[in-house]
Image 1 (cartoon, helix red, strand yellow):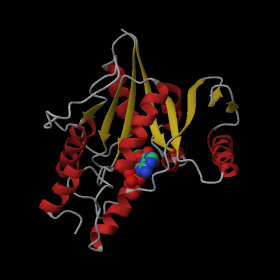
Image 2: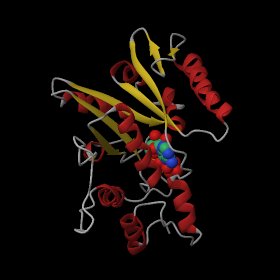
Image 3: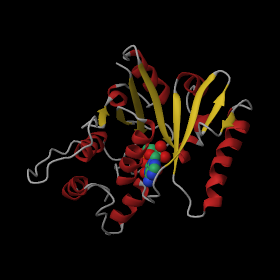
Image 4: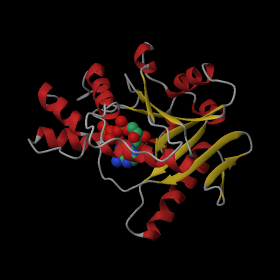
Length: 239
Ligand code: ATP
């Protein structure tokens, strides 16, 4: 069976609706069968200040995506052939000692793949614009297709701008041989995998914003799934 699998890594400190909604949209746009949410235990690029325990971050992801359907009067309804469980949680970066490098994670997934699996690494534009600082980024770009998601700007003219920014970045920091294929909305390179671009809903939510709201005793309701909010409050996280 042919499977298209998305890999979406993050610090998830905490997971929020911006993560979940954008990945659902990417999944539908690219016809992915499954998306693995991969918790970065020890992020190499972020300061550990304010980073809560990995177990709490993992529990919040579980609460966010594995909600059992308790409401019998409101059964889940999906279109036919729709995979009922779009997300899978991966703890591979927790089990692996040391810093959480994406190249190691991609190699792990490829080593466990079935014959016809194809993998896509899903990354926000802000994170992608630092990829030249990632460990073995050239090997990474050779080994896996990337989907860069960005939030549309309110002004359509600015939309073109952000893909221009990506193009400039690729050509100056990564390789002059990337060119934009407008038909595929992807950057192509003679010997590397494609870098796809996709617009996702504009949700101005970040984990940093949520941490700040909690620090200021403000509500985070509807920015995170209800159960995540309850977990944060019960455990007094981010205070
Ligand atoms: P922080 O605010 O602590 O830096 P974050 O909200 O950016 O965190 P991460 O866990 O670091 O979340 O991000 C994981 C991935 O999710 C990154 O690729 C990032 O670009 C993407 N991302 C985060 N927030 C959004 C959002 N609102 N919409 C789309 N993508 C997002």
